[in-house]
Image (cartoon, rainbow, N blue to C red; front, top):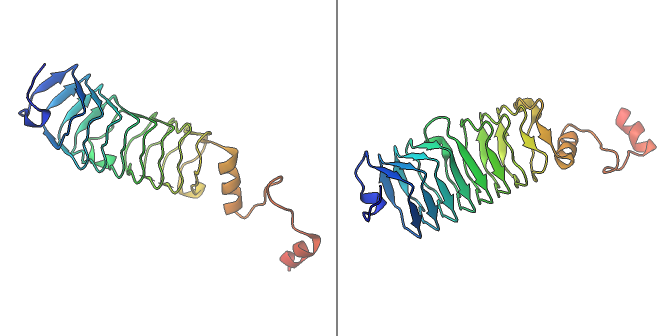
Length: 213
């Protein structure tokens, strides 16, 4: 469908296919379906979506800060170089299909979301929240996870090998077979009271004796 009507004025049930939207301000969308659409430089700050279907859509250099998903369905949706500050993906419909590259995602929330196989490539994810998430086979390549909370997550096959700033409590997660970086391994070892050869100084003989008493 090609239309000159602004997206926000389209009635529920409208199908929009293979359209590109450039530099638009979007405040509210309700009940429409967007298929194979592209958004470039659009502003959706504090926008509200209500039961919108987004399928095979891409957002490039868009600002979606504090966007509310309103139970919208996200199927094969990709975000590239976007701002997603404080966005709560738990507000979307179940089992979203997502991909992220080069995005600013500080304070983003994924609590309870199925993120199996999702790629977070080179994203800034300070203080993001992953509580009771399915992270199996997810890839966090090059992403900064400083201050991120990971708790009660399943991580089988998750790849954190090139992520930075990552820390989590293994006992609070199903972390078996997760792939982590040496930096993270050292932080986990220190948190468990271990000293790591090559990075920590050994205890002196006197200190070791004192520690045994």
